[in-house]
Amino acid sequence: MKPHAHLTTRNAPVALATWRILTLTLLLNLSANALTAQIFNFKEYETNDPFPLTVADIEKVFGKGFKATKPIKIGEIFSCRFEGKKYTIDVSIRPMYGMSLADYHRHASPASWKPIANDPDGAMIEIRDDKKDDFASTPAIEYVRKDRLVHLQVLGHYYGFDRRKMPKLRDEMRLKLAKVRRIP
Image 1 (cartoon, rainbow, N blue to C red):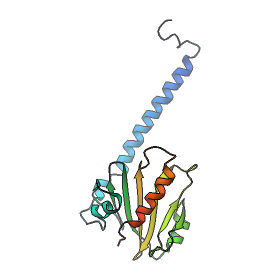
Image 2: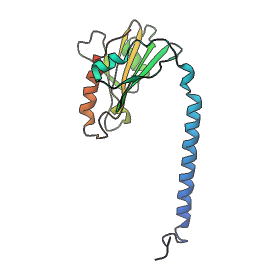
Image 3: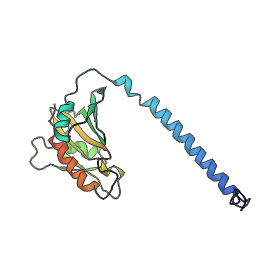
Image 4: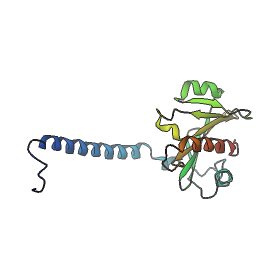
């Protein structure tokens, strides 16, 4: 068989179209990444203001091996990430302007939220459908203190890419998020 015998003139248009699509997809991805880097240049929002949670607070619940990124302040929103080997804990604080957590979730959240029983701050767990939602693997909790919404979320593959283990491990992560020292 001759080299490239599978590339006959009969299927050449399909091969050419496939290469055009792949090339266009690559160009669009590169353009989108460059645009995102320009639009979301968070370096300019980095602050030296101390974040209310520390690496010690996170490690007390999740174990050793985390480091904090430089906090970011955009307007009244204050956030910081605590990066570990397998996952990151993302924490953000934003004003509520007198709105209740239930009202906020009703108007501003695509997910469902379930109250944590007997939680002193009325914290809620984000509920997403494992089968329909790509964000179902990112456990999150929220609570309000002193008119500030505190959002804690686990990002990354804490479940080791095994989707069958994810629901049980996600529930464990939710419980851990609820144990992190409360702020402000």
